[in-house]
Length: 263
Figure 1: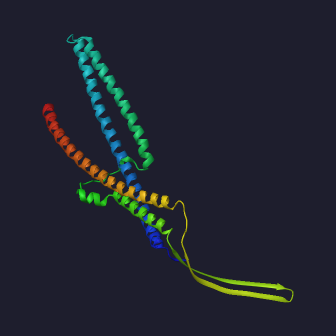
Figure 2 (figure 1 turned 180 degrees about the vertical axis):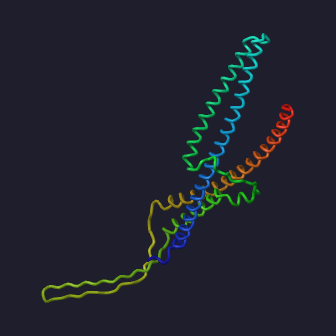
Figure 3 (figure 1 turned 45 degrees about the vertical axis):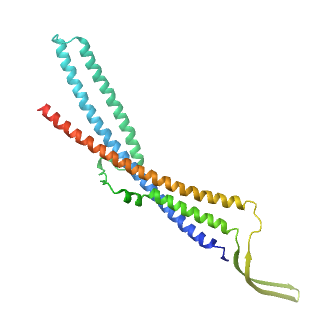
């Protein structure tokens, strides 16, 4: 039983702990990705429903326009080209409606592959903006990268310790009994002690340690890249929300205008 491995025993335990935490975070990341996929699929279903509803209204408008153009043509106010154009517009809207229904069906199949629930019965979660520092502090992607770096650091130190002295305790019990006729021989004894060992030559030693060091340095760079990616993701989300709020304000103004025109 090794009792001293130039730090290798400690780093082995530390590596196991970091690896367990890394796997736990990886599972949470997978769960997070699955939830995001379900919500995205749900939102696309609702979007297609609204687009189809809108398309049906446009189609009803086109039908009214065809009737109006036909009346004007029959009365001699318009030539047939205007009526033909209105009929073609109605046909294009009908084709677009079929395309939307096809896309909606494909999206429904994708949603069903993620969830057994009826998407119409789902109440989506309400999201609120958080401070950038809070978002980065809670980011599972950053935590996972950070743990990956610690894990590789421990692995590098474990590798180095394999080429340094190891102190082990050993012990054994030996018992041998032989019989030849009337002659019987008993031979038993205990053996225990301390053993010190160290590899004398390994041609791959330098390369192996260097590779572990490179993996560790690479993980540090990847952690910084992940932090930048998460910062950019946050900034992009904030900007998109701001632009969406502006679009909502413009649409509300248009709604008032349409109500005025309708009246």
